[in-house]
Amino acid sequence: MYVNAEANTKQATDDDPRITRMGRFLRKSNLDELPQFLNVLVGQMSIVGPRPHMYKDCASFSRVVDSYKLRNLMKPGITGLAQVKGYRGPAQSFDKIFRRYQWDAFYVRNANFWLDLRIVHFTAMQTFSYILSKFIIIDDVPTPTLAGELIEPKNMLN
Image 1 (tube, one colour):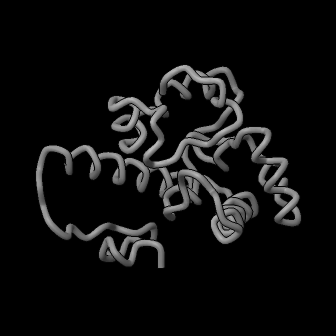
Image 2: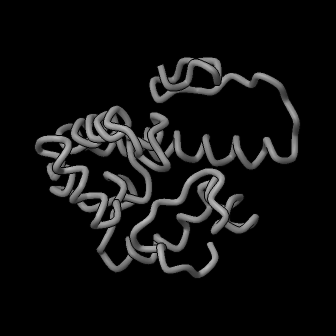
Image 3: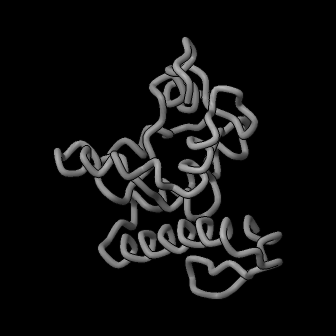
């Protein structure tokens, strides 16, 4: 992303002119998360957990969704259940904010080693699928879900 005055207050969007071509590739492939492993080593983050938001967003989301701050009971994660379920990027509607919260709350209440492994596995599958799609053109490749069954890409959020 180019240096700009709105970096701490405005979420990036898909067609945001502040994003560089390399930044767009890194974001879509999840490779932009690799430097956050330093935060994991320092103990400020975990590998799996609710994704961190800007303070401004956390405050505004907690005014819209009761007990939104429940997600703050755990360390933020590099990846999370809401992300592998398709809720990533800007949350601009109540439905997207609420669905994200539901998956994060489910994770906070049910976190365990095996769930973490499934989330890490699915994140890796999404990352490698995106990177391979840039080199191999295949139409309508089915996408595995967290439960292991295959669904078509058009039905991914259902």
